[in-house]
Image (tube, one colour):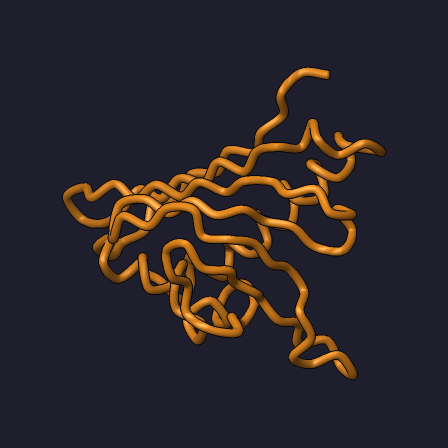
Length: 140
């Protein structure tokens, strides 16, 4: 199977230092994605929590922060129950430009999913679009 990766780019009207908070701080992640159990720290494990009724506060997705170069680059593993132990990798790049930030996400590792890899990647591709519409609203 060929290498599959999701690539998303957003143009945000805020400096990278501001955008960085929405990728790394637990309370800011909650505004567009999922609440963090704690702020992300280089080399540390992280968990994002659900707000689904009856399951509030349960671990939804998790991984390890592999690299943090504030406010330019963040790399972390990413998994959840539906990935059945497969860890994918998210690489976030923040490029300062006159007037804001170009934020790029590369989410890869889908070929490691044994069943329905394409469908799983397609579902995450759609999910990122939904989350990013919220990120545009709160980070600008």
